[in-house]
Length: 125
Image (cartoon, rainbow, N blue to C red; front, side, top):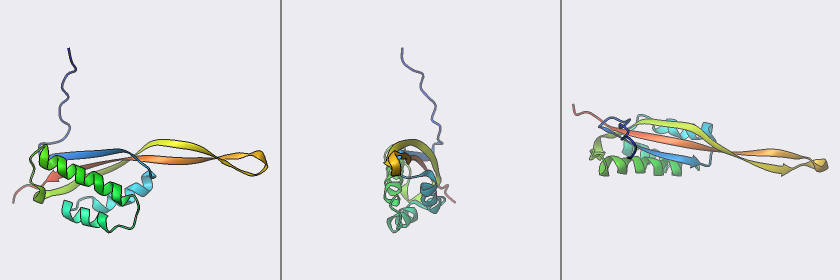
């Protein structure tokens, strides 16, 4: 006996990609995700290529993975794809100690974030 097959949570004209541990805070990652929401995928890749933010390179990788999933797994037309969703969430937080004066210590928190990019094929007009 195996598990029951889960129904697909995306529509037939959608594909997604997820990055679960990006080494950046969720607020900073959301600033980059806002830049690409609603754009055509070619325009979004160009925006991320020239973005000065460090995390834009990782967001670009996730977007390209979603495009490849749409093309190879779901046979969608790449020229008609756009970024339907780019959702950001918090993942784990690494906690480290920083030595301070008089034998004390303080906590350094190093947050991780998760990113989910959904690309959708535009309907023909």
